[in-house]
Structure formats: C-alpha cells, structure tokens
Length: 199
View 1 (cartoon, helix red, strand yellow):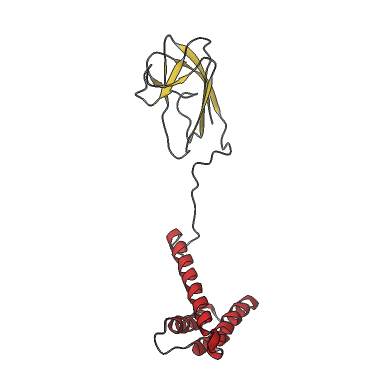
View 2 (cartoon, one colour; view 1 turned 180 degrees about the horizontal axis):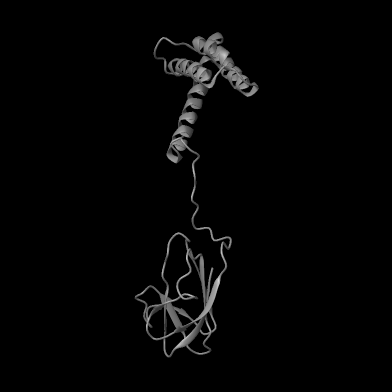
C-alpha cells in the first residue's frame, strides 16, 4: 500500500469516524470498523487500528456500552484536535519547527573580554575592550577604588539616581545575547578605576 493509498483509505475511515460520532451523514460505527480493516500496513498501525475497530464494534454490538464508547471517542477527537492546533501554531508542516530559547545564560560561547575602565564624573558606557562585546551574555563590574563609590544605569544615569557600587564591590549583569543593551557608569567624585569582564 503506497502512502497516497493509505492516506485515501485513512480519509474514508476518519470521515466515517467523524460522522458516526457527530451523528451526521449516513456513516455509522459499523462503517468505521469496516473502513479501518485494510489500513494496517505495519505492526504499529495494525495495533492502533485494531484498538479503534474494537471500540467501534463495541459501540455497535453492545448497546449498553454505546454511550460510554461515544464519550470516549469524542474525548479522543477533542484531544487530537487540540494537539493539531498546537502543532499548527509551531510549524506549517513543510519543515521541522525551530525554537529560539532566550534568557538562559548557562554557558560561555566565546572567549571573554577583560579590561579596566576609568569612570569619571560624566556618564559613559561601560565595556571591557575597544567596543562592546558582540552578543554579550554577561557584564561584570568591580569598583577597584578603595574609597569612592560609582553608580551604573542607563545613559541618563547621574551621581544621585544610579545604582551604587560600593568601593571593592562587584555587580553581575546578565543579558539576552540577541539584544544589545548599553550600561553606563559615573563616579560620585573623582575618576576611579573599574575592572570589567564581558562574556
């Protein structure tokens, strides 16, 4: 049985399945059981089809179990539809779906950049090398001054409103590598030295 042949026969069976459950059309559960029989082309398919056939036959031959079988089949249809909707929201089926993870900073993908930055009383962007490291995942800033405090924040950071880094203290900032975010620093007094590590 070719794939096209299997698809055609499966379509007939599923149409009977749907109509029998919904009580529409002229198809019955007996039609479903009959349509399922020729679809098995592998052991796994045979197992699945036999199980569906048994449910369909039970609903036909045992009136007492009919309501339960119908309820079970309706539940199965609902779950299948939910799964299909979730799959459709991920991929159109023409190629494997890809997923971009974000917010996970669990590993180093390139060598770190280290350096020393002179922080003055005017806000300036903080980075270790000649420019900000591409796809930066983490920025570590250590205030190496024994007395002066520095502050960090956005480009509008001032000596009063920035986040303080005490003398000798270290701050770790994590980033989404796909999004460049600038961090600025300013000294509360004279120029001071800060050790910088970018990962």
